[in-house]
Figure 1 (cartoon, rainbow, N blue to C red):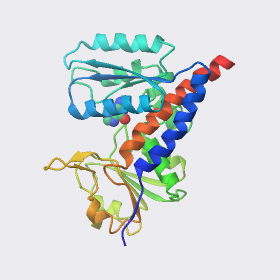
Figure 2 (cartoon, rainbow, N blue to C red):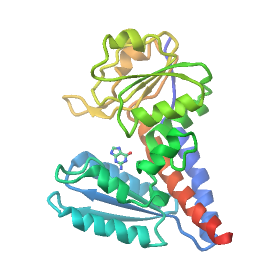
Figure 3 (cartoon, rainbow, N blue to C red):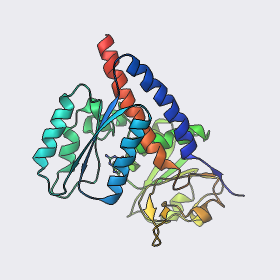
Figure 4 (cartoon, rainbow, N blue to C red):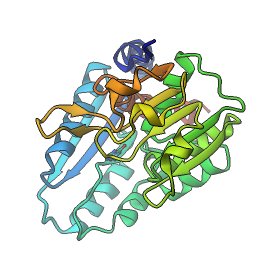
Length: 287
Ligand code: GUN
């Protein structure tokens, strides 16, 4: 039997349609949701991600600003720009694309963003809020995965979840969100012993390591839901995930493809967070 495909493009289109309606309603009240994106350096993948984020904003009727800096820019210039954006009431969300060049203190940059505009959910205050179970901004990729699980009616309560990857961007917040839904969560990483022992126990397997096709069909429990967060290139230059789709789809019950799975949902949830930030300013105004 081959797995049911959880289609991130279709779900994105549906959610973005709803967001565009909310953005239009807010515009009618005189507020145009606006996302500011900062890119430092020339990493080609980051440049593509930023272009896609800006284009998605425009399409959903939101405004966007894009600041691009050379890889050797003085960090003080970027800090000054973040301070300006923090102070600008017409800007509702601020995102600094990661990774930053090595001469940047990435943590300090993320802390410089106002927590009220931190639509990535990476500021320590927002990380803490998520950990305590009162999220203000949910990091976009794990947020998108939760939406996909919900739309595919995947049972969460008591489910055995194995997350492969312990990053601040995906693995750790993903674990918090699933724990809040009463899953039993295991986080595996590069030092885990016998990875397949863990992955084979998973009712829901989330792969977020950044290594092409490293999760193969024999590592998956029959009928499991497999969420592939990876975006890698094969030696031939084709996009592929962390999961070997061809062998995995023969074992899994449901699976997200790459491309067309988690990727589009990440951008969709960035739009959702930006809109949410803008709606909160309107609610503050109305008080
Ligand atoms: N680099 C890879 N993923 C992300 C993300 O979700 N947000 C930011 N800011 N940078 C990233």
